[in-house]
Every structure is written in structure tokens, then in C-alpha cells.
Amino acid sequence: MIQLAAQGAILIAAGWLVFAALVMTASPETARRSLAAMGSTPAIQFGEHIPRAIVGIALILRAAQSKAPLLFEIGGWFILASSILILLAPRKWHNAYAVWWAERIPAIAFRLLSLPTIGAAAWLAWACL
Image 1 (cartoon, rainbow, N blue to C red):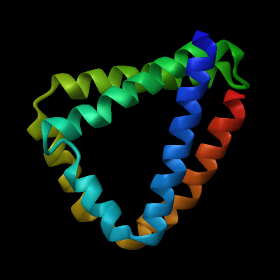
Image 2: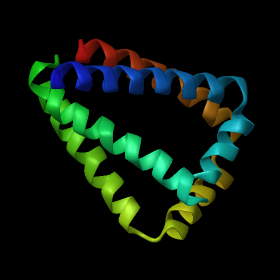
Image 3: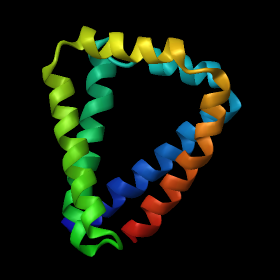
């Protein structure tokens, strides 16, 4: 049951990455505004990092049954630890960092980065199954 839940969480995360990549391709300005909004409100902060931490836990739990156990375990621990650290840090720091990057990433970069994001999502789903 836990393995099925972990697998489901990872597949949902892969779907979310595909959705994000499509937004990056279709509307780089929407992607930029979304990036700049990270950490701007408590709801956005928790809405970003609680699901992210859940995916980190899912990667850890699914590691042994995946096609890339070491990557799943290391990646899962990194995602979980970084989500906890960001949640513990002042929210304004997170938002300032997000705004800093949003102001510097050119629109074409969002479009170009969408392709490897889709590739990563496909790999994640494949490695999970």
C-alpha cells in the first residue's frame, strides 16, 4: 500500500513537471510571474513545500523498487531536506530569492528549459514504474 502511494505521488509529480513545462513553453511570462510569487504568501509557501516534501519522501520510499535506487534515494533526501530548510527559513528570504531569479531569467530560457523538464518528467515516471 505504501509503495503504491509512493508510486502515485511520484507519477503525479511527473505530471506536474509536464504541466509546468507546457506553461513555460506556452507562456514564459506566466512562468516568470509564478516563479516570482514563490514564498510570497504563507499559502504559496506551504503549498509549494509540503507537496515537495511528500514527493521527496515518496522517492525515498520507492528507491529500492525503482530503476535508479541511488538517484531516487539521494534525490529524495535532498528534496525533503531542502523543503524543510526553506520552510524553516524566513519566508521573505525565499520570496526575495525567487524574485531575484525571475528578474534575471530571460523568457527564451523558460522555453528552452521546458524540453529537459519534460525529459526529466518522462524519466522520473519510467524509473518509478
